[in-house]
Image 1: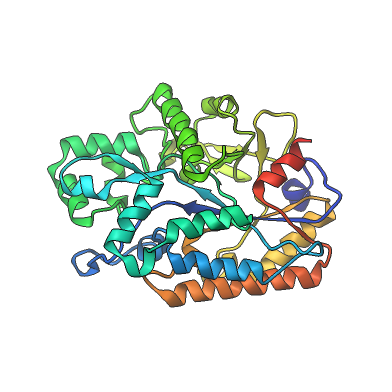
Image 2: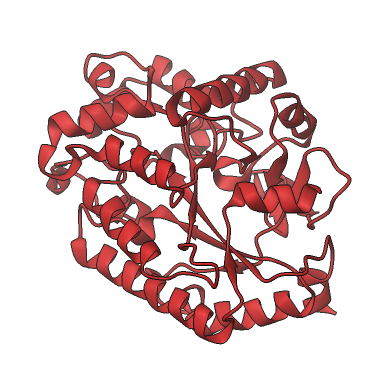
Length: 360
């Protein structure tokens, strides 16, 4: 029953398809050349290793994706769910809380750390042109803009911390004052109303097209908090699919949490797409397990469903710790080769391609 609930619902597809859906690209998170000695030890792998994707991050990722081809000769494809804006670190230093475009973020990183970031934006765009890197929409920013802006305006202590960090990371201790998770852009309690949320979404979609050269097909909310009232507005913006977990909680405040169940289904606008396996190779234990992904894959194909692997950019980041990236990419390469070995008829497609198949 559990297997059917996870894989049995939704549209069936005749072929075996594999999609790699990877969150957080375009997000600055930890700044380059940061002096970590003045801050507490990072409490999460994101605060420890997650940086804006560098030249080597992308180049080495592309090498892995090119190393495995399906029966039609097509490379494996990354569908990175990407942000369009970040906090402007230069303005932050000068006491102004404002956004910059993702392209400007790459330019600023190149100025601060040319060794790791020179030419990165071109490499990213080259990957899009090649069809090996196919971004989708992860939001305008990956932080709680309304809550953080309010806190910035009223708290000298908060302003001091952000100026010293020159970036947004490691802010969990401020969640109570913010009124929601600091990294959840659409947190229900961040003081913004639906009109503000709609404006953020609309601007984000416009900025995506400007940055990446085309309109996004799908959207997955940062930190998976998203008001149900906004789902229909996504279709107004031209988004054909919203990517949601099978099970989510509907509020940040634990005492008010309720469970929302999602499943892959056609006939809804936008359609709902649910990732059905998880691969986090930089985490020790169950989520990093290649056998687990392969087992989930067999179950999905049993019900004629595509395999949508969920992951995060941090697994493939090496600017801070190159060995971290090496381990993640090595495991990714092994997984892809094992998939090809067990399923010679597998077809690698982008998330955009998948939405087209599910919508037809």
